[in-house]
Amino acid sequence: MGLRAHLLWTARVRVLWLLGGFSLIALIALLRIASLGLAGQAPQRTSLEDALLPPRGEITDRNGAPLARAFPAYALWFEPKAMGDSGAPLVRSPAEVARDLKAIFPDIDEARMTRRLASGRPGYLRRRILPEEANRVFGLGEIALEIPRETDRYYPQGTLAAHVLGYVVEDEGGKIGMEEVLQKRLSHPDHRMEPVALSIDVRAQGALEDELRRGMLATNALGAAGVVLDVDTGEVMALASLPEFDPNTAGAAGATNVFNRATNGVYELGSTFKPLTVAAAIDAGVVRDLGRQWNAAPVPYGNGRTIKDSHDMGASMNVPQALVHSSNTVTARVADELGPERMRRAMMDLGMDRRPFIELPGKGRPLWPKGNWSRVTNMTVGFGHGLSVTPLHLAVAYAAMVNGGIWRPATLMKLEPTKVPRGRRVFKESTSSRMRQLLRMISLYGTGRNADAPGYRVGGKTGSAEKAGVGGYNKTKLVSSFAAAFPMDAPRYVVVVVVDEPKGTVASSFQRTAAFTSAPIVGRLVPRIGPMLGVQPDENRDVDISDLRYLVDKGE
Image 1 (cartoon, rainbow, N blue to C red):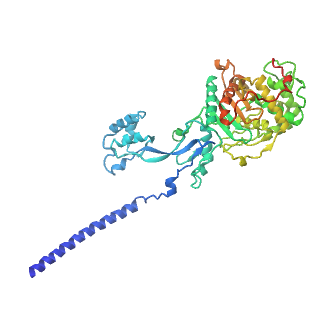
Image 2: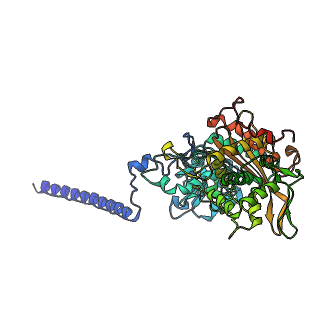
Image 3: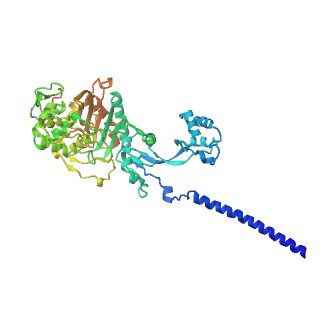
């Protein structure tokens, strides 16, 4: 009995020791878990909304084509402490790992990558890698080479509409363009699930950029800009500035060529202002009889200086002839008779004294003549000198001139029919009707003939202006522009093209003026975008100019 009691007591003691050991181990484990929980980061909670919705909303064109969207992406990150606080961060030497990375990414500098890995500093080795590249990196077996999954801003159309869209910088948000304008809406949890539709049509945008690039390269120009505008709503169907940039790489690498010539660049746009001057004069009753002969001799304005034409156009001309042949002298006399105050008011009504009305953050301030306009300022503004504005200013003004006389602000947002602004009247409807005739005559008989696309009834005006510089105008630097509308019997769209410093080349018949540089761009563009925008060619229709045709000799 004593031996049995002794064995039982021994067994109980051993069980107690075993339970105590297990309890101690469990206590140590719990303490370790608690310490890790306190020292480490708390688990991140992700709501269902955050899991299903992109971190930034999508931008589309007016037809739903994607222009900017969130895109899952991979990065290559170097984490030297991945294998612990002690010991080498890599299994193999930095030189060997760099050599293997060179095989995956041929564009990297192997020596520089070796130094980077040997430094032991954590950070990105590459901001974006492809999934197949990520798999090859995993295959290297280096724990320190991590592949974090991130969300990137992706522009599926590449450089198309870059100046409209802008780009996104990580942790900073949208920069320039509509990415900056729509920053709050695109990132707001309540709105980011809804794509934002812009007014532009990606097909028209592509055609505009293509023809601008072709014209710019053909004349070795410094740059180019273009706008296609709906005359009845103010919606921008296409807006381009060349040279362009790639928004896919701009955020990480730093953007170049971000200056928007269409909305931020201000230029003296030359003779494209002449129709606006004539419209103001018709509206004010200064020009009543279009058959009246105006003195076409040089206009003296003091100190022996004169306003003259590029070549002798005869002793006198009527207003239609002056527009067809682009006479400075006759337009200056029309402006002189209109007077500085009425001319100044007409330009202000067209918004020429303010930054252009558009959502983009980059908007150029016009170089507006200060104070009361002198006689010479009034006359020179009449033919497009002494006042510098953006191409968008000109497009909006031409829209008002041909749509019945209603000025509306431009917009890059798609508008529902009920949301179109009423606008304000700046020209009489009868004046607008007359200007449609005159603009059509310029394309039929005058300097705009290279823009006359068969069947589309294009009407417009050329403008060639020397650039202002120190001490006067630089005769070797020209800004050539063409402002047009189509179809002129029922205008739907305005097209403005500006070419910055074109050179006389074989493609332009060794000419720099707008008739040979900008007008042909419009002539090629309109047949491309017309059917896309609902305008079909019809050579059986046209503006009725029978009451004016006799005033312009077709053989001149």
